[in-house]
Amino acid sequence: MATDIATRAGRREWIGLAVLALPVLLISIDVFVLLLALPHLSADLGASSTEQLWIMDIYGFMLSGFLVTMGTLGDRIGRRRLLLTGAAAFSVASVVAAYSTSPEMLIASRALLGIAGATLAPSTLALITNMFTDPRQRSAAIGVWFMCFMGGAAIGPLVGGTMLEHFWWGSAFLLGVPAMVLLLVLGPIVLPEYRDTKAGRLDLASVALSLAAVLPLVYAVKELAKDGWAPVPLAALAAGGAFGTVFVRRQQRLEHPLMDLRLFRNRAFCTALGGMFAGTFLMGALMLFITQYLQMVQGLTPLKAGLWMLPAVVASGFSFGLAPMAARYVRPARLIGGGLCVSVVGLLLLVMADVSGGLPYVVTGFALINLGAGPLVTLGTDLVVSSAPPEKAGSAAAMNETSGEFGYALGIATLGSIGTIVYRGQMEDGVPAGTPGPAADAAREGITGAATAAADLPARTAEALLTPAREAYVSGMHVAAIIAAVLLAGVAVLAVRLLNHVPPTGTAAQEDQKVTDTDGSDAVAPDAAGTGDDAAPAPEPVRG
Image (cartoon, rainbow, N blue to C red; front, side, top):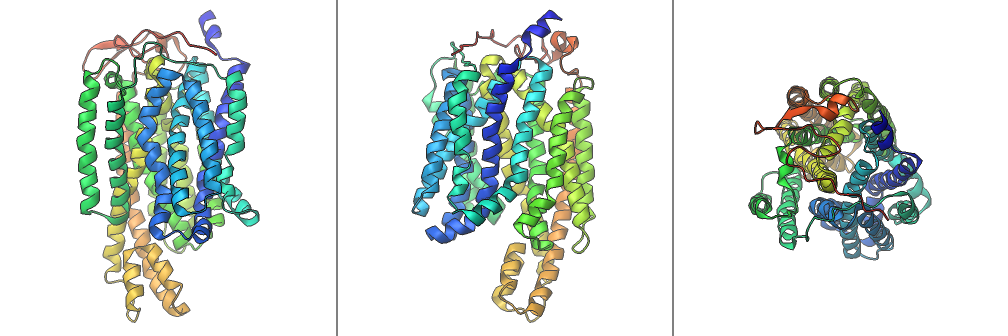
């Protein structure tokens, strides 16, 4: 069809995608390098254990807190402008972090990195949606974007080990600067500008309320994951919920809200967003179990553990690339549901892993988990951002990212706590007689405490302590994997039922179909042009 040809992206858009994807690749590498660099920078700066936690966590706190604001801000002032501003701020903050002279300076620069990072993902996904209006090309472009992210996860440990062997710890923060500079140079040339000229002013009260809701909630789930139920995290959870309620009520009254709640009237949007949350909740937490298993149970170094995780990363890349192509012929619901069933099989393989001969099961299981997650991640993200009107694409992308952040944090808090309960219950009477009191107490707390305590014990005593600790940890991983498998199977069924009305991408049926919203009213099927009767007319792109 002539219309299809007219809306297909050309060379400029694909070059623009490369410019957008490179920073994602290097930032992903940067995150994994920092995990390896933490012991080095802590020793150099004299950071306490509390300061080390803030160095790691403050980035995620600020990123989560500002995602909604930055997504909506990009819709108002221009997505390219916000992206380039964020890239410049990220570069400056990276340099400050690299040359920090105190833990406080590094924590402050990491906070700025989080705020700048919140501009990148929503702006990038929104620009991809605007640049690739053809559904098939858009799905493929989102798949490439996610492949770059997972590629960074794959080579992060390898790059990190090499850099820390030849350079100082600050080099970890400088890794993303060249890509940001490239983005600043090429962005104005190859990236179009889009903004909603009728968006109205940014409501600062809504910004404050969103931060007051998100930051305590993120803090609460992280603390609950580490220390279990305690008064301070519970109070933060209650405060975040209260501010979140006030925030939602304010959005319902505003003519130009910070978060357009009308997007939730679209069934495809809600289902895809909920699926992304559930997927990261159930599968993201298992990554923590697996990395701990490889290092604490199998005794692998971080570099060797990273190498054994490469099959899972390769499986992710394959799945991210294949899912958009398969979605041209198969309904997204069936691909997402079938993929999640593959992930369930991977989770069940984890249950077969034991202390001595479990490495093949864990490596294969993790690869299957990632292979099956591809359709949910790529097609789910595409459904979220394309279900929104073009002028709300930044806001929709921010909701997608926020959902993933919360799902991951809450999954670690919930499944991690379940694994810890199983571990402590088994270790209560599992510590060998004759183990020194401090070492026994540390071993009962967790597998990391057991490994640390064993390092100071004689070889025979250390092995006697580590054997039951490893068995208890594997038992906790088994229980978490079984729970995740059962719940993920339920998510697969719901995805098939609720998304079955969405046809394969790029078909005439996708453009013309009618769908039924959750309130029972008819609305135009979600596509690049809007969300149905409630959608505002698409604004003309403001190019520059």
